[in-house]
Amino acid sequence: MPRYKLYNGERIQFTAEEETARDAVEKAWSDKKADRKLAQIKQMRLQRLQSTDWMSASDVTMPDYIKTWRQTLRDLPANHTDENAYDLLLARDSDGKLTHSVWTQPTS
Image (tube, rainbow, N blue to C red):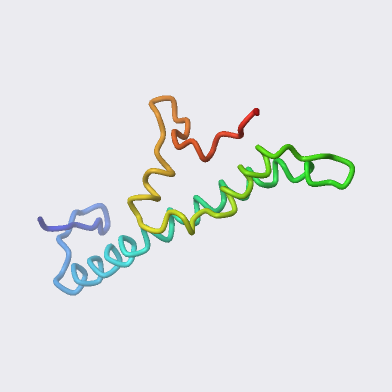
């Protein structure tokens, strides 16, 4: 399917060189998809760890279930190493909430 660009308000078909350049840009973007997902996972992990950092203060006793959960978060993404696993970690329900259990802070 040919690609087009706008030039002075006129739609002009890409040249062969422009097609090649655009294909290279799209391939580079596609090749970095797993890296973008991994960065998103690491950011979400960091936010959850930071939200419970206060529990590690010397005057607070962190419950074992929080220690276990924090360790599980720290083990990400080592325990989920391929793009399919990244998709599972990033899956959301129809309300936009993350569905993987690792993201839910336990209450006991």
